[in-house]
Length: 251
Image (tube, rainbow, N blue to C red; front, side, top):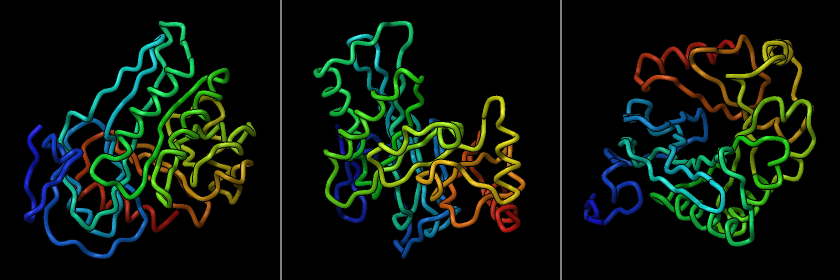
């Protein structure tokens, strides 16, 4: 695969595929807010160097005894100074009976670690929604990711908001950060959002350092002291970002 040349250096990972474009001067960064960038063309340079970006770099499907891995297909443009979080999406193909053998687990971990090394990301995030019976698989993969990452590299995971409020298994998650997603929730979701807006919090203490929201269903209030991740169902632009910053000041 041909590498792109940037500032006299060869850049691999997403850049090698022509999917990650770095432009401008590097500057100091701060950890929040974080803009999620999913599988569509995105140009996030307008947000400036102080805004972190969590970019989907690859997707893995566990299907029977197979591991199906797919690289990001759409380009994303960021500044060199923007903190990059490599997001790895994992799902289970429920049309097939999953064979979570030691061999399949090792192959899934290898695929995830390959994506984790994309573009020398500062952090890695695992996005893996599972059924109740599949929770050990999520914990297995998170543990394998943790073991394979370089010392000191942060690992986070997304979580359904209900996991953080009615269940206890997340206490065993081998990650630095859990991001409860406060959008696209099922029954009881609005009640939970109201409780958080009124000063309440998640019952699982490990879910109290970060939170994920969506631009099309903004909260009326949020618990303080959270690292904020934001999902946009459409391509990001400067106007949406300005609206987000204005609304966030009131939460």
